[in-house]
Image (cartoon, rainbow, N blue to C red):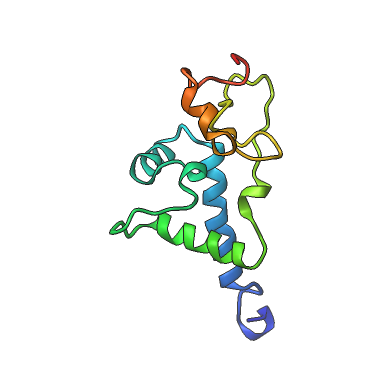
Amino acid sequence: MSKDRGGLGSSLYAINRGLLVKWVWRFVSQRDSLWARSIKAIHGSLFQSGFQVKKGHNSCWRNIIKEVESLSKQGIHVLNYLRIKLGDGKSSKFWCDSWSNEGVLNDMFPHVYALESCKNITIADK
């Protein structure tokens, strides 16, 4: 509702949608935070699971994933807008992080990834 009619002047739906997408950004950018580690332990990596939420787990993560899926159906692919800034490569995982324009390497090359002995190696160490 507009401000002159007593509203906020913004859509609460749009604000909520933006905040849910921000949690995806936090999951990617702050991957070592307690929240991100908890989500990974329960549901797996965002990139590896393909936006899967384990059945029987009603959580805020399920709502976040539903919103991402809704946006994807509208042609807005949230993960395409999230990239890791490499810098020196010491904190970016070679196989598991989305640092290339093509996607996450372990998803693109699962057979090569299966043979890798150091799956958590950083780009700097590779």
